[in-house]
Length: 365
Picture 1 (cartoon, one colour):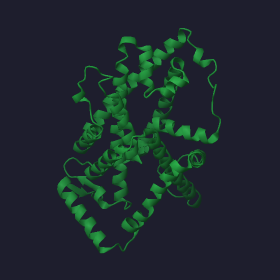
Picture 2 (picture 1 turned 30 degrees about the vertical axis):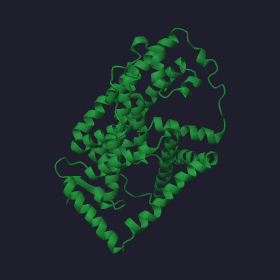
Picture 3 (picture 1 turned 90 degrees about the vertical axis):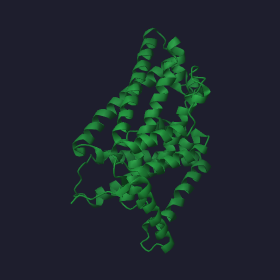
Picture 4 (picture 1 turned 180 degrees about the vertical axis):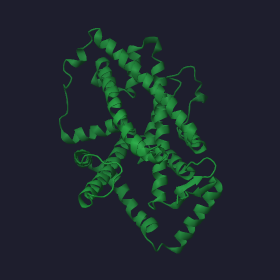
């Protein structure tokens, strides 16, 4: 699921980092589709601080780009250009299933809100800082992107936005004049940072899953020198490069969003069940029960209705998810595994330990 998200982001970088957008680049300098995820995988394997520095720099460039867009949009509106807001909902499709499917594209664009939860073990004082980070970042990001979309719709018509491969680039071409070249640069920086954040966070998901026994133990190894989950990072990088064979980004995004919504729905259902069955259980971080109930209803809406509109497309996604059930049962969950499978996985683990300098995480006393 998360390597698919990385693939979609990487394709966005490759489609923009071209000689057409940057004429001074030689064609030989244009990155291949696999170059960027391989480079970022290497950075994350080598040093955690390097990965966080990369994230900080490119997040700052994204914020700068958003400030430029908002300022240009405010100027455009202040000069009396309000034609696009005279009939803002004209031609709206009110079909509920289409509405839910449209959410998939939007949820993908604004994803990242849950990545912090994946690296909670690497936070200082997480029980204090995690809720604080959520309470500060969510309203701030919501306001910034609301103003950004306000600027987009002030300058571009819905038809122009749908026809654009990168709305920010089309916005820059319309508003920034001779400086329009800066917007493709900022978009590349933004997607580069998003891909790095996805690799950093998603690899921890594989690592913790393996540590808890839900994935092969080889993914629970940590490099003894850099303290990074190298096997998980390499596995994620390999799967990302493999999935680059897909050329239909929109369909890939639908697969990712449907799968993500399905698993979130299942997780929230389990949370509600535990809150009902074990109300007095110790919970370091606890929210008002209305929030998970509302979230459950939204996820149910996002999972059920798109199946009605796209039964074949999402049926394939359900089939792929279902294939994982027998694989998990026979290869992970079942206590009495076949001898050849156990020997094979032991050999893979030992070989990976040697090649990656990996060791299992030591448990604190």
